[in-house]
Length: 375
Image (cartoon, rainbow, N blue to C red; front, top):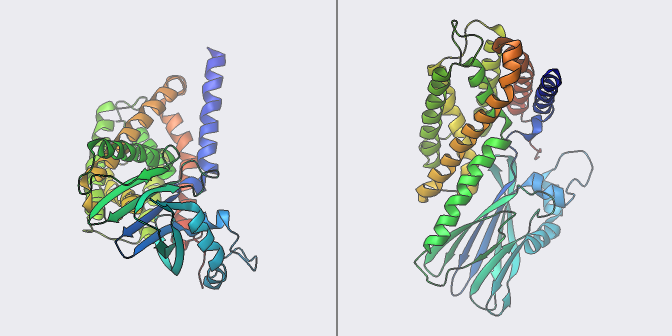
């Protein structure tokens, strides 16, 4: 038993250390968007992609000052154009289409500054399929959402490491039910992924777990209180996720992410203080802000998400599943340490690095320290 206890304690310390040292991983899933309009006389493509992701493939920092200036982007137009052509392969019945980059613009993504690359497609005949290879050997979590408007009908697809090839539907105007089902499953998966790599959301869930106790039951999790917290959090972030995705609410990304970090820090402070814990109304309020954070990622995935309510619901369902699985795993993992040392000691011990990490997140997000500079 002593050996088992030591193993659990070491794993607990290791997990908290990873949380503290992995600040840059919060909200850092790599996402790009592709929009293709194909007609009888002209074809165009628009690719919105994170500048940091492009910098992983192309060295844009010509003067080596650790900042990317707009002039450096312009000076590397040829290389960026080549990257577009190599990353997105669009084929017609008679061969591959050529891309002719005509414009580079700046776009703000949930992960920071990005480039909007607009190009003409020169195709021998009608477009039939699309394949995607950007970051395939560098980032297994990278995904790209493609919207296609082709001869009067619209279609969409999500590229990921398991599926990087998309064939335009033969029955124009009618989407195959199997294709829609596959998309729904992919967006559930992305909701789960977003929770599991979003360390700030996971940290907030930990704070809810540590706060779910009463004075009479201070040595164990109050399951009824935890259920109340999760219900309030779920309802709140679902409301703002839908509202923001349908453009009813819009707030600056840095502000939303800073408040999310603040919610984690405030909750951790209350747990460490050990007297007054976070309550259900406060959880609901913070849940509204977390929902806006979810919406920014969903916006990168689907653009105007209101055009596809089913994908929005699928993503939200994935978020809920991810939360439930995380809490079940953490509860099981902490079972022995809590029984030995007590709930209060474990909660306070774990909340200290969470508070420090949240403070770093807030400083970064308020100062935009992680965003590449344009001038």
